[in-house]
Amino acid sequence: MATNIDNMKSQMRKGMLEFCVLLLLSRNDAYVSEIISRMKEAHLIVVEGTLYPLMTRLKNDGLLNYRWEESPSGPPRKYYSITPMGIHFLNELHQSWKDISKSVNHLIYGSDADLTTDPDPETGPGSATTDTIRLQTQFQHQTQQQTQPVIFKTSDHEENISCQHKRQSILH
Image 1: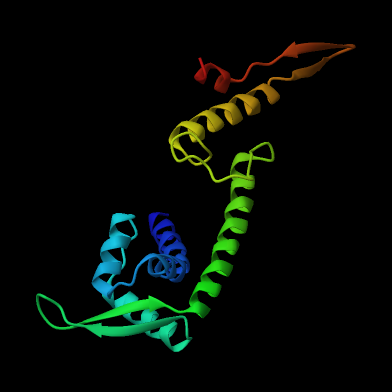
Image 2 (image 1 turned 90 degrees about the vertical axis):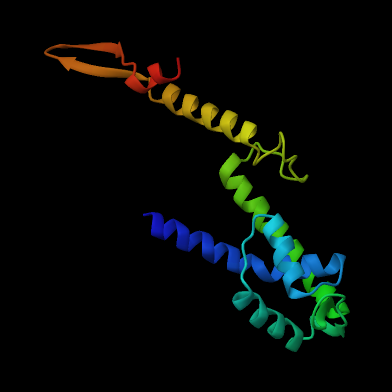
């Protein structure tokens, strides 16, 4: 099971890598080691062996340019910058991210969630506080639904008996 989860996480990160690289380069030009460092700050672990082929592909697709700059310590560095076509592509990826995020949040938080604004990381959808409250509410709702009368038939008459599930006691 853990292997499947790790594999899924890895696939999700790979799918977002191109978007993240373009996003970083839309703010500042950078060399690969700097991109890796910024990704690490965001808790996205990327290795050079993954990033270099992506950078080459993005450059060949016309989304990035590069230039060589002398380094004060060591060999010259290859600085990447985003092209106008890269900015256009990034905008399309960003819109796709918003759409996907909105859809997934709808599934996670339900139709009552306000999905028109970006969530507040401290209190909005996705925060630990909101997730805990949402999960508790969903659990209570499920247990309330499951505490409906159960009808037992005995010989010639029926008795309505309210059946409280053991899970109800967990909430108290």
